[in-house]
Image 1 (spheres, one colour):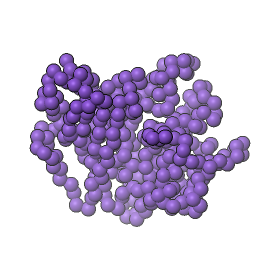
Image 2 (cartoon, one colour; image 1 turned 90 degrees about the horizontal axis):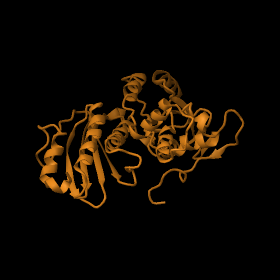
Image 3 (cartoon, helix red, strand yellow; image 1 turned 90 degrees about the vertical axis):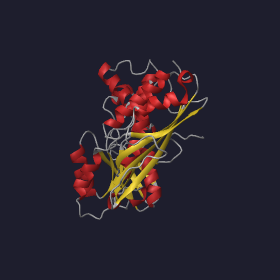
Image 4 (tube, helix red, strand yellow; image 1 turned 180 degrees about the vertical axis):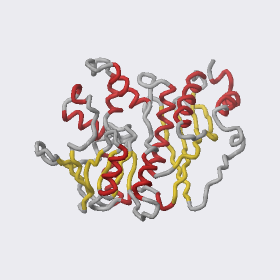
Length: 332
């Protein structure tokens, strides 16, 4: 069965099953928010053959990744997710099963964070496109912004980087990583197909800072790469940084399948790891890394310069400037 067999209203009836019945059905979803809190809103668009393809991503996994990307943006602001809306553009001969599996994947990810789909839109299009708008709530004095960083603060990566890029390579190139165990292969592929937004980090951050703290930390997620996140925060805050290549958390298995330089390149520029990159005072950063564990790390410090340097505490490699022209760019 295809979309054209059931029409717009038929498709809407199916998709409304994924939403709370008491919220959908009107022209807007209405959700009550609390006083002293801000509504955080983010929109992310995914296009077939740009963000996903049948070659590497099943519809269920594409749906999961779509939801995870939006939840990760909320986590990067310090926000707790409330709900999402989904705008779907599909061709008339799109398989109905593809759409249902996509929504099942979205729902599976969202349910882990108690986040409902509360509406959206559907239109005809020659290219499958999905635009998700996510709504979250954040306390005004706990909003994480890119512009909050200060010179001397530590730079924390909440987990390993490069796994998603390696997972993509395994899907695109069957010859890659032939010496990997099935467990390691599966873990890398899942890192690409079903990333986990780091909403779990936020309660730890607030516990460490304390309810009376006036420190406004800086951060964003690393969906476009670790290097991109560090540079974007530095640029917004008017600071520079020194990043130690020896401190960047890289999957242990990379030593067996990649050269040192390739492993570093994938960690810095591979993207889609959906970890958080946070700038905060050193004493808080050290405690945060201790509590998060799982290969979170302090990867560098902010400086009062505007340059961003990749350094090497082992003394083997020369310092090199990080730039924004290495990662993925839509129109380059």
